[in-house]
Image (cartoon, rainbow over all chains, first blue to last red):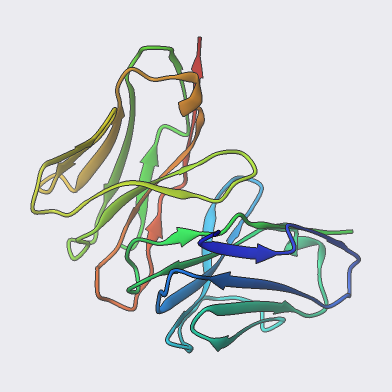
Length: 112
Length: 113
């Protein structure tokens, strides 16, 4: 009964490809997030959805597009992948924005 | 003003010692200060958090000390164990606000036997 789950755990792809990462939470939370963690371990927020509505959209290339089909799911689609997109992507959720966030296990994306 | 500055970047402690990680912030509107623990290959996990109405919160071997006037807060790990070896992140936010949780840059803690 994993609280926040992500698929896939590893993603290796070539430059120029399009890929998606899926996230699901079973905590009944209203807010979900996508974070990017680079090789130096910096955690950078990318997007946040509250009740399926986008509330945070950081300075992220428009090749990244989040989609929230319902409160329990937040997917991340990435177009035209670049080498610099290689990182670990974390999904997280919380009952309220900016409070007690629970993270998924991460998806390690490697672009070759 | 939205930054949270965390130090040290890395910390090596002997088993049984005290690990101390410090964070400082500028935004006086922040009212929620969590600490996250991340093991290699895992997602960050909420460890302990404090609100500014108290100066200290303790959970087992982990204690947050909060100094509102200095705009600083710190994590103390008593009797540090090799199993505590992980990366620790402090963070801050304004609760009930749609703005984001601001993370520090992380501290890699290594506890040697």
